[in-house]
Length: 170
Image (cartoon, rainbow, N blue to C red; front, side):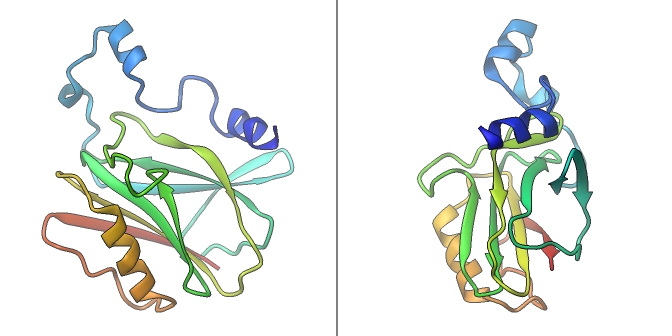
């Protein structure tokens, strides 16, 4: 119930991103025509009391902070969102499982359907958003995240055609 309330507060109705039913009702079946161009971005919000704040790279966070993740596809068709914490543990945020489609929502910022509560891992939580024009191998990316571990100085080694953005929370 708390997560549902958070989603309602963070994401007012109508801002959840692409919906095929909504597109069909509006006659907007041409997915290419509605892609937002630009740079793919990962947006992270934290709820504090009744306030919601967007977190910048290197922002300080603490255990029990509840985070909501959103992305802007920037014209990319496919992507994966995951995080690596200060112990090197990897968490997948989008898609929900390694077998699910990595197709991204079109249009405005898309809010992931659930919030994420930070545990008491010391150090940092580093969030990655990897995008491309072709389907992305989620399992391979998670392995690269595990191999990267706690090294904040390196980017993920990616094949040609993929781009990445990351946000580190301390």
